[in-house]
Length: 181
Image (cartoon, rainbow, N blue to C red; front, side):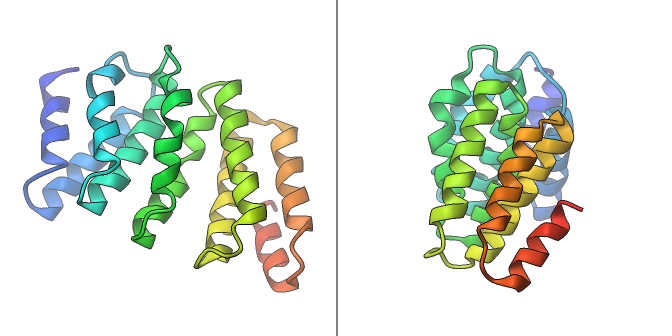
C-alpha cells in the first residue's frame, strides 16, 4: 500500500467531517478493483466493526466488502458473520449502509456469493419483526439485483422473484418488483 492510501485510512478516522468523507470516497474508489494490500488493513478493519463510533463501524463493513475480491485466503468466509452483525446495528443508518454494501462480498467467488445469498434470503423471510423491515427487504432485493447485474446468474434473479412472490402486501410486492424491471 502506498503512503497516500495509508494517509487516507488515517484521515478517514480523524480530521473534520469533509476530510473524513473525502478519504472514505478515495478508499472506496481504490478498493473497487483488486488490490494487493488488503491484509495490511484487514485486522484493523475487523476491530473497527465494533468501534464505538458508528461511522467507523459502517466504513469498516464497506471497506471489507470491497476488499473481499482481494482476499485469496478467503478470510471473508470466516469473518463474514462479523460484517453481517453490523447490518443489524443499533443505529439504523449504520445498519443500512452496511447492508447496502454487503452484496460486494458475493462477487468475489461462488462460496462467497452462496453465503451472502443465503443470509439475505433468510433475513428477508424471517426478519419481519425488525424495525423498518420493509426497507431492509428493499435493500436485500437491491443487493440481489446488484449481484445479478454483476454476475448475470439467473439463480439470483429466481431467488429474488421467489422472495417477492412470498410478500402478501400488494403495495410492497409492486415496490419490490420495480427493482427487477
